Image 1: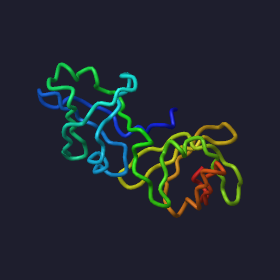
Image 2: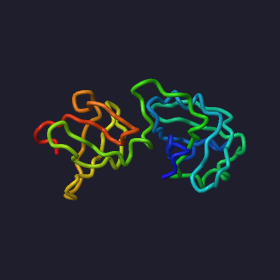
Image 3: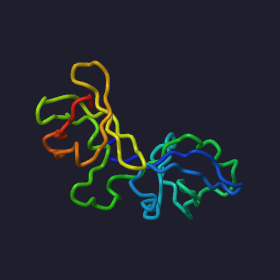
Length: 169
């Protein structure tokens, strides 16, 4: 996984005949897309595609790139992820983290010690869900990323400190 970029969404489909694309967003807020001036499309190398317009409809983002004006030019992008470079992202507020920086961190419980490694973060409407691979290799468990379970995150130390309840693992 490249840490110089972030997956910010996935192209779900085309929209209309003028090359607009329907994007499922992976960012915390759909409004984040309004700050993007380009996107990198999976499978298209390092090319930055310039955003001509962005609008939101329900829970998707409709993106029109300057480079494309016809549905036939963009159909090949269906189901491709879109990225934005870390160097162009605004600074995060305290207590916020990029998902790419959390993946692979040790998950340490205040009673049981190391319980696993964070493998994935699922985006949910209420809160993120951490997918944690158990240390004993017996599978994964899911933990809501909420204050009740999260004690603190230390990127430098490579650890996510948690307070698990019985039955969560």
